Image (cartoon, rainbow, N blue to C red; front, side, top):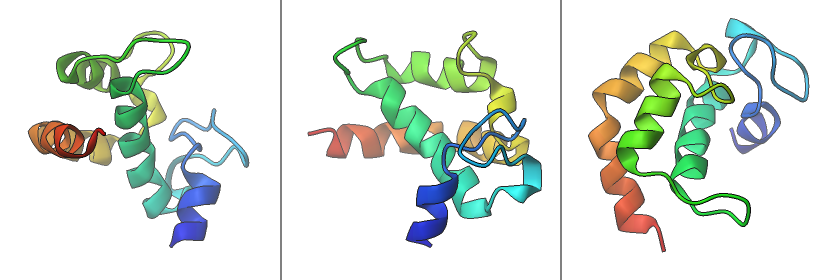
Length: 98
């Protein structure tokens, strides 16, 4: 499973990801799930090149897009599950952010 996640979590549902340019169900489910988790963490975390986003901002970017991150990057079924469990993402992030 770790290998599937490592090789596929930057693939995008719309086919614009890497390294293989996989699209839709070609992307292993594990990679599709981890993709949205990784994106949420990246948005919430401070980086040398950007400030951390709030939970509300991160959810809005994933579900509505911001020009760089778009909902079309993610499996629509996983976006729906993300919306339903967004509060749990926040709780987990806050509990383990350090």
